[in-house]
Image (cartoon, rainbow, N blue to C red; front, top):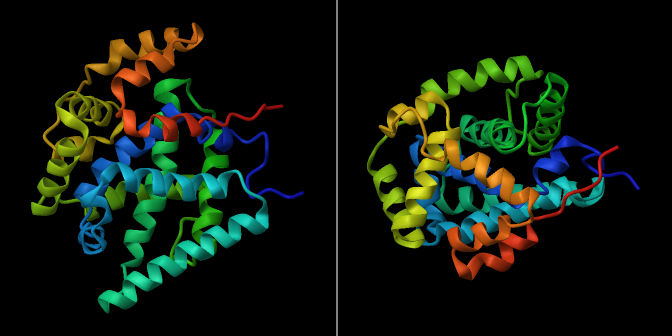
Length: 256
């Protein structure tokens, strides 16, 4: 049976752990708020109305691709295209090609940043592997002008960060929703996570400080995982309504 992502891939390890996935979407939630195409998220209404529900909906699609057979992954990608096509048809406008690339670039970059923050530095070969998986997703989605290599991605990612991010009224509105749905304490945790893993340009636009208060806490969290106590911390830090969904994110394959 042929899988879209090899069973011993670092991508499966990254997307098979709830903590790395939550870090990925903490970072992405900052960039979504700053992206110049964020009006598309407000057009559908799902993200501003319920950011956490939208998070787990997006996660389910990404994980379906990462852990599915080749045929099933292709069907999931085609379904994503249909959803986007329906939204574009309803609005009478096309989502910009650069906006599609931005989302793909986020998945690549935050997969790397989140794993390295919580686990260990990735080798260049592993980074190439992460890029290759999401390049194939973008190619199947027919996204135009994709980078052909990880090195080219790094350059394009830097340019996209400079050109496509802007702090405006949509940014304020989305962060207001984050706080409303998370509550003060969990909202502060989101901000500290974003400070920890987002690129310099994002931190500048959000007026974040340079260092996160989570830096010393990461070592404590790693120790709690070794003692199998990390779920106690997650229970304290994450909304109870989503505990079941968060548990279901853990799907770590054995690596050869």
